[in-house]
Length: 181
Image (cartoon, rainbow, N blue to C red; front, side, top):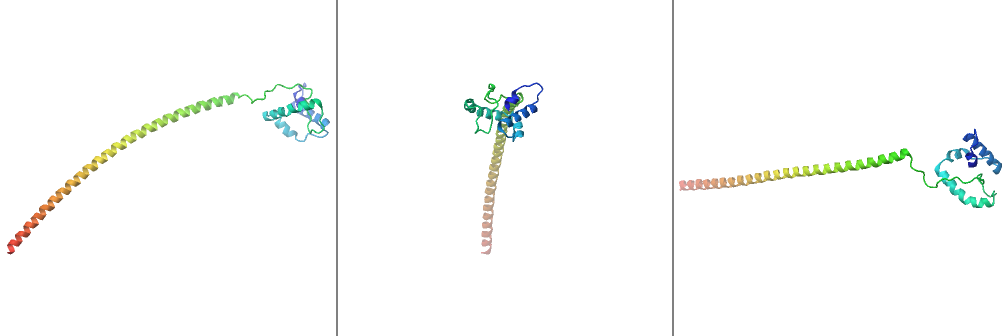
């Protein structure tokens, strides 16, 4: 089939070449091509071409000795054709894919630099907020110290007032006791 496709007969379309290849297949194999629609889909796919190349290489040495293997379900129509030079590696990157890769690399670098800037800003905000929080805590501590000192002073004055009241009560009781005597 591939020999039929590769031949560049004047005026033949790919469909005409496929029909001619199917006819050749019928004459060699004595039955119709059963999955022609699959072949149309897969014939130009890189995976299929890779598989076909790997299948063709081991077969050629055995098929050169015997042109037609009766046990085989396939017929190689390319026996007399010289092999086409196709690299066995992956296809090179296309223009659009290369552009997308460059854009992605640039975008990821920009993203990383922006993330770094944001993390630096976040750290500075944390430091500022930490400093502000420490200042507020220091202010609260000093206010609480002042409140505690005021509370102590208040307690001292209350104790002194209570002592004075007790002293006055004692004097008052002594005066009453003297008056009753």
